[in-house]
Image (tube, rainbow, N blue to C red; front, side):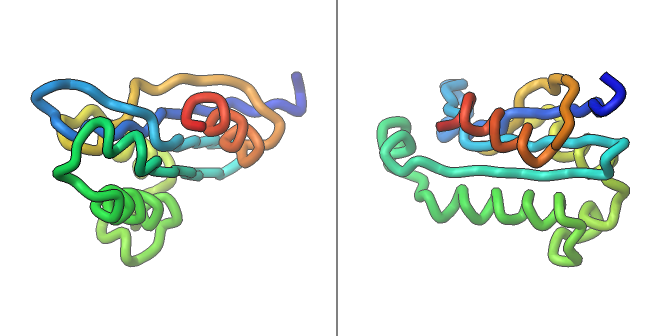
Length: 127
């Protein structure tokens, strides 16, 4: 256990019609304070999106998620939020919201490699 580090993650969800409260998973945000890691991985399946709504395009969601990625990376294109510390950026991204892009409640765990854990969670809950 000495080689394992705590992490937190949230599942990213697309909610095409917020009033219907239907969603599907499109990505994962993972944060590990001790490893100084904040990562995001996402994929919007066009077939799933079409089944939920024909009004919003994949490009629209990809634009939203690219902004989230800029924030994760601390890129200046992430705006003021992108300049926050890692933990604050994670908390902002994982905060409860009622928009068409939402995140689940946060979950925690232990891992050796946060990047690998991000990939594993993505494969399990998104693909």
